[in-house]
Length: 136
Image (cartoon, rainbow, N blue to C red; front, side):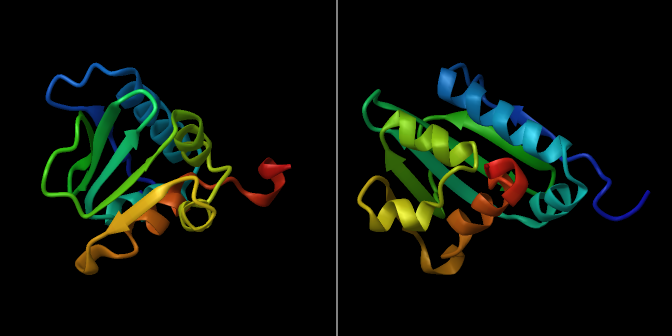
């Protein structure tokens, strides 16, 4: 098996049942299944990213660990980074149509990160961003 061909499992953990958790799982699973390069990047990612849809009062934690990606309902400490904003903005982000830093600067999303994992939101964006030909 070539490097990057390994499967990175994306699971709902700890009884996650929210619609947001399911959507995050579906988007990540789809993006990773389509690209060996994305699977290789995902396998190296470490940290916990919280996503919060402020208009619906729902949040999830995406845990990038050595054995795959686990999605849990709620903000599960300790978090390395968080992204909060309207559900529609989070969905566009998960679809790879927007960049977390650009959306933060425009005031559409609030992005925070710890110093030890400052680039986690951008690295996660690298997993889901659309290729130039798909973005059209």
